Image 1 (cartoon, rainbow, N blue to C red):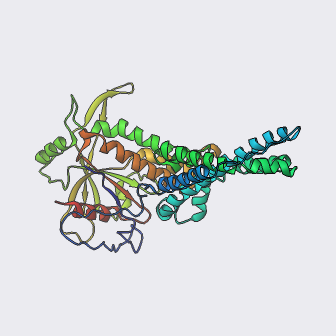
Image 2 (spheres, rainbow, N blue to C red; image 1 turned 180 degrees about the vertical axis):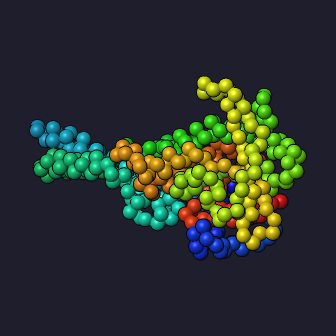
Image 3 (tube, helix red, strand yellow; image 1 turned 90 degrees about the vertical axis):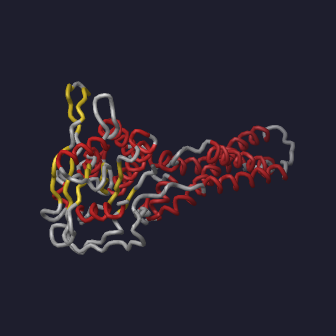
Amino acid sequence: MPLKIYDTGKGLTPQTDYFGKTKIHEPKKTSSNPVKQEPSGMPKNRGYRAEILAFTIGSGLLLIAFLFPPVKHEGHGSQQIAVQVGFLMWFGMTFVMAEIIRRVCLFSEEIFHLRTRYDGSISRVVLHVFNSRNSANFFTVIILLSLLFISSSDPMVMTEISSHWPTSFGLCGLYIIFISVVKLTENLVDCEVLLDDRVMAIGHGLAYSYYYGFLKIILPASENSQSLRDRASHFEFEEKIQLASKKMLILIPDTCFCTPSFQDMAPCGQIERVKTLEDVIICRAGMRGRPYSATVYLIQPEGSKAPVYVMMEMPSILFVLYEMNTIGHTNSKLTAFERTQQAQAFCRVLGRLLEDDPSCKDMYDIIYFKDQNANLAQMIYDHVQNTKQ
């Protein structure tokens, strides 16, 4: 089952805060079938623009190198030493320029994610793609240009060096193709640009921790427990309550702020805790009989005809990101923008882990939402109505 990620940031527009009466404008429904919403706050998967552009430019440079072989010049005496030093600097500059071209190719992809990944800021795109927080590239260019200028003080030396420009084009083309296309890693910009000394892959690690430490235990069947769906069916029979869905709703707030109670995110009485399903009890991490629970909530926003009952969970582990943003120390401080990026990374990685696990099929829905001034009861109610079969 493909992962469903819903961004309610644009679908619901509250007129006041959620502690007062909140008028919600619902998105128009085109049919009674489930609505597959296109996430507007969550970044879309990256395409292949960067790879295609890099391959095109690299192939063009290789073609030029093939059509225009270098012209040989003979030097004598001390010129040979200057030529050799000049060659070293020249080809060093070649790889620096190749890396700049590669970053331009990455920029061509990232600019299409300007709003969802970079909050509409072009300066942030430039900052992350060209990694301007690291001045090593700048000083490399300055040093190489200076050394090239020194080695080219004799016009004959410069003539000999510059005659090998086709070779430089060929090396540049090979570098771009092999680094950008052949050895392309997943989410290249995330891996190579964001993971510097200051911004770590926290969201990825938290997603793995939440999956293996909770969802992998609570969702599928095991030797000692039933699956979430079977326990939900048993709950319906025992409590005489009809659940709107036998899926766990995993709520991921944009700010990573996890309230102590879901009731705090809706007007009074619109969300009520009902009861937990039968606990999954295992021995884990030095504790025998450790319980893992799934909780059922009653949802009835203002104006609804009847309540709905759902199982929902907000990963408390995300609160780590919120605290790193608000009270983090120098070496662990996240900006609000970096916090949101890590939350989105958490959502993407968690979705892939669940999609790749057949034992968790049809047992979850991931809901990424902008939680500032959001009425959680209305949001969940609309989600349930839109996904009913």
